[in-house]
Image (tube, rainbow, N blue to C red; front, side, top):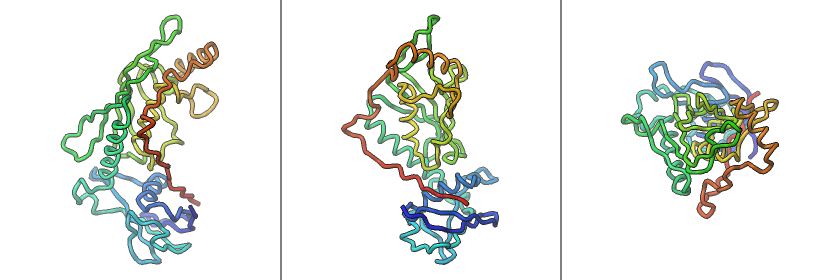
Length: 278
């Protein structure tokens, strides 16, 4: 993935030097730039905002499916970011946000078709063409709490609500656990969920998040060390986790099953664009 030196001209008129991969689709580059540059994704009227990239050297807009290499962008070209001022007037099902939501919906349907341990329902759609709220159900072994002696109380049904707010995917979705849970990175009282901010990028798809949350339930994924990031979210659960692991080596994961059936897993390499701003 060769990196191409370019200058990015911002909607505000400023400019940033950058190195961008020349074989990533423009749609992925735009998602990454929106996140890195913290560009707004919602206009003053509350409607989704999109952006376009124009090449000064070519004198035209770059298509979403193009790469910088296929478009023959020269080194040190000036790539001009422009807010899509027509986004608010386009049909809702053609906005960048709805296209992303629909893509995530398709990926989630494919995921549950490959799993006997994960199902989902949609909530609060209210006529929009793509779901914005999901209830994910995991049918795997996890820890719902502990008894007075500190012994884990196991459960086999776990649910989390995922809300795709207006800043998604530049920011990770809203997450609220719905069932009793005992995990260092999920607060057992207010049921909020902490994920590693360094792990989330705009190009990270929703199905990958759903898998990660399921692996948290199974205790394949947890962070209980208060001295190293990502830090625990529930101090009580983290303290218990450290002590329990010390007393019971090999106790975790509590469920070793794969969330996806191995025979039907589609191996997909995640190719997040590697944009380096200067």
